[in-house]
Image: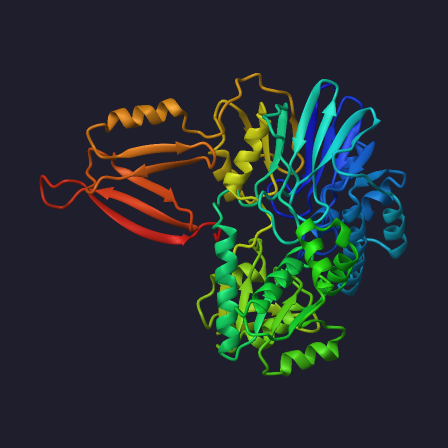
Length: 546
């Protein structure tokens, strides 16, 4: 097959089990091999059996989150000599994640791999630096900082005269523990972009504002005598929250109380301490000036065993617990939630993505006093009433729709494949991509050609500037002002004091606003004759919480 093709083995129309095969002229390149959080045994794996038809020549690990690395030893079981390229930080973190995956899957009775297979897998890792072009396999690739997690990378793939940009999980916002994704200074055209779309249907609130309200909510709970549980992804998110809390306590914004790290967050945070030279420069400088450990200092405490955890759960002393898992599937966080959710003075704050079937998503959708199913100490699910304060704060490590559109536009591709997103997110984002470009929403198992469509590349928004001009001309007699901001890909409309049927045709209009809510405008006729069309405004659920 001479044409370049993309084959999604998992992580296409879902967030989980990410694994992607690129069929290139010179050989096959496999990117990632993840597991599905919350699933066990074969159900947790991508369609790795498809690799028998298309054996990979080389492999790239974009980062070490479970949904990208959890099935890596299963691949090496089948291809024991496969070289796996990644950054140094990813190689270090992968060892922790695979060790935890082995422990959890074994306790569930469905181990995905053995200790020996994990060891052989780690021996296949070949760390490479960012911006280093690797061409040992005929095709070439370069790892670029993606901002999602310490060591995370996007991949620029070159095959002959063709090029493909694989975003991986990406974030265009810097945090205390990772810099923002790198972008080329000028537009750099490629034949295709394969992009994640986790928040493809959402414009996230400004991160600084979210941090401020998050700190305020924690302070209110602690001053009220309550305890705060923050279910968190152990990699990156837990360390960022630790930094936020340390800074807030030092500045007097939050009372100084114990901050307990439990579950996988313990070993990962210790690993982050050892990787200080790989962390952002401001954090390195702060640690050097203060002569204190960047994370494990002040009131931060590692919960070493079950006895210590039970003591924290039983204590009525105000504190903050940061515990894995971030979606409340398993691990330490459900144990705290079971004890604390029934009490109104406590709080549970969600700070990351929740998949559609996760206990964390169901908890967010509950009315106060409703019940959520959580694992008990034996792994069985039991209902738990939720009377405590439950809120979501967007401290995501993923770019929102605006950030993704900006990144895609910088590479001006002829074709765009949207992966790593639920149906709503992918469909919504596809609607914002220019219709003059090929946009594909592949399902797992689909083989998609990556050839450039040959269509003219242009702005990545479905409403062309000339259409906006026509809209302004049509309503020139009104006070409507329409402006398109190319930096944020937003259309801003200033409405007149009075809406009438001449301005809007009959139907339903949806406007998305920055604060994350949807405002729905409906136009309908009055019952009495000759009346003008009336408008009604209705607020709906926060965007992204379907």
